[in-house]
Amino acid sequence: MEVAVMVNGSDQGAVTCKVGAERRKVRPSNGTIWLNPMAARADAIRIASPGLEVAHLYLPKLAFSRLEAEFNLPQFPGRSIRYMSGVQDSVINEIALSVLREMSDPTPSGRMLVETASLFLAARLLHEHSESPLHRLQREPGLGLDNVRLRRVLAYIEDHLTEEITVSDLASIACLSVFHFTRAFAASTGAPPHCYVKGRRLERAKKLLTAGKLSLSEIAFDCQFSSQSSFTRAFRRATGVTPATYKRTIR
Image 1 (cartoon, rainbow, N blue to C red):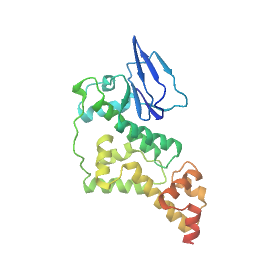
Image 2 (image 1 turned 90 degrees about the horizontal axis):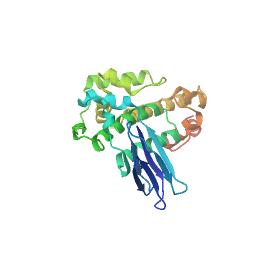
Image 3 (image 1 turned 90 degrees about the vertical axis):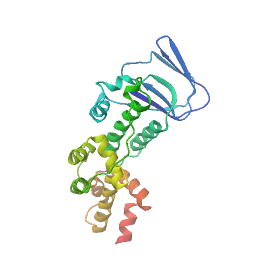
Image 4 (image 1 turned 30 degrees about the vertical axis):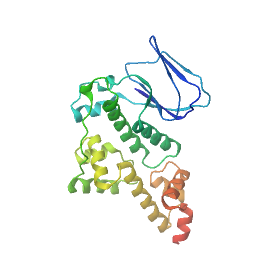
């Protein structure tokens, strides 16, 4: 299904969507959201406001399927989402902005972020925007991982910092679903998996800079950054200095 979120809108003008015989007119202010389920499609969209920027998230059926066993849902739960235009949902808006920030400024754990974001987006849609109340998810208190599982997961992360790590890998090690693991890991460590892994990779980068045996580009790729420039930006945000400055200071 498609989720469109207005990230740079205006209170002037309008966006009109035609679905069948019905027309829906919406002011395109920041955070305005359109939901276009898998079983529905807008016949026409008319944009009467210049300079708008919209983030379009395309959620695959797999994201909903992963929640079926977790919450004992019927098959194809994604088809129960209502077609909506002009709604406000702060959770969906923040998910869209986090994905957009990752696209604009890649980090070494971007895939993990998108992996969990898609799952929580599907859960939010089912919980708040489902056609049938039978599909509404029950809120459960977050429980952390037990010490044995947590140590096993953290050891795996440390052993694979130079390789691609997915949330599915970590959830499998903990013998939990991805959705439950993500919440349990955050409850145990105080950070979601992608943030924790990013932090550990930055700590590894500091050690490599201190050793002084690798170039900045080699350190960037060793720590799973897509480029030296993305590594420099992330390092500076975390420490307040560039990698080159940190290296000179340490030496």
